[in-house]
Structures are given as structure tokens and as C-alpha cells.
Image (cartoon, rainbow, N blue to C red; front, side):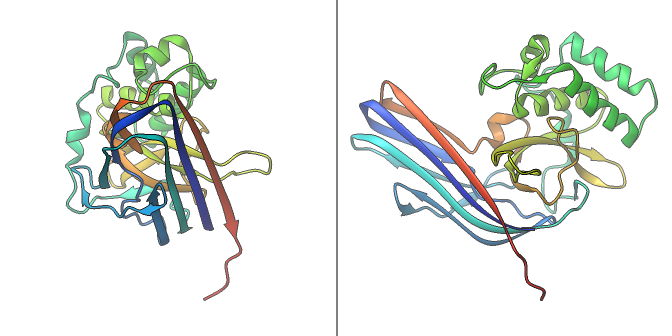
Length: 271
């Protein structure tokens, strides 16, 4: 598929901010499942290229505004050709070893309930069948309900509440998979609507390291592995490592945030 992405994030401060510093992970890391035709990030209309790569292989940049502002606009404009690899990302050239992604983080500590769910899935046999059972078990336990969690909600908290969004599904799956000995990591990106009437969105899923295949993506929110509808951007141990935007500010009280994502599928011509 040939996709165009328009992603706008707008901050408005009721009281002006006089210092804003943000670390951005808004550029895609290399992936066999996608070919980036163009990718442009702007901050208040000014081009911001990525300036480095973090320890997880994600292109990153940091920007700072040290004057009074009431509005801040981040925009992404991109065109990407995607391929269906059945979720298989494969090996990371020069990346962190898979075993690094076995250690829990504060957001992915497994609760007794998550451990019980994981053990039940493993008890019916291992391999990919076990992982697919685990994906469905996570989705069965955590219903998709927006505005019931936030960026700092842990896997244990979302599991206990029984509600959450794609970020929570991914982190519960990661916690359960690590308990079973599967290296697991968090992935952020975009999801093009699979059916008419469904909105485009920023999205999150998980990748597990499976012997013989390497890293394989699983999206428990939709009970599928990522296909050509997905654009992969960043990865890490949990949400904090792969968040598109993280930052701090001074001033800027009464902040409001508006995010819009539009993804269009273009007709592809034969080469």
C-alpha cells in the first residue's frame, strides 16, 4: 500500500509558557515492511530533521523554545509504501540483544493476575500458538475503552481495571510475554483504517522475539499481527522509550492538546 500521513499535534497554553523542551521520536526506524518515500517533521512551521539515533535504534531530535509562547504545533507529513510481512520484523542489525528486553520496567511489571493469565496460555503448549493465545487472552481481559487510562498507567493497573487503549494492551502483553521468557518490546506508529468508517490513528503494539523468526509484531487491540495497514516508527522497553513526544515546560498553565491523524491510501502504479 502507498500511504500518505498527516499528523498534527497542537498545544495551547492559557498562560504563556516561557520554556518548552521536547524530545521527539517522530521519524521511522528502518524496517523491511516499509519504504519511506518522504518524511517531514515541522515545529511551528520550521523543518526539524532527526539529529541522532537512540539506544533502541530510533531516530530522534530535541528542540527547545526559550521565549514566551501560547501555541505550539508539531506536524508530520509523510508518504510510505508498506508491505505485508505477517508481522515479521526480523533481526535488528547492530541493535540491542533480545535478552535486554526480558527485564521488566515500572510500566510493565507483571501483577499476579498477568502472571496467571500468561501461565494459563503457556500451559496449552508453546511456540507461536502460545503467543497467539496470549494475545487473545490479553484482549479478552482488557476491553478497549478510551479515556480510562493515561500515559503513565502501568500494565498491572490496566489489567486490574479491565479497560484501556492500545498502549495498555501492548504493555500487558509485554509483561505477560516476558514472564514466559519471550523478549518483548513496545512499538509506536500509525494504523491506516482497515475498513471504511474507521478513523486513522496513532497506534501501539508489541514485538516479541521468536526463535527462527526474530522480532514479530502482535497487535492485541485488534487481535492481529501488523500488515500493510501499519507504519512502524519507534520501539523501546515500554511507552516511555518509544513515546512520539516527551518533554517539560515552564509556565504554560491551562494546557490543552489537540491531535489529529489522517492517513490516505493512494493508488499504486506498476513499476
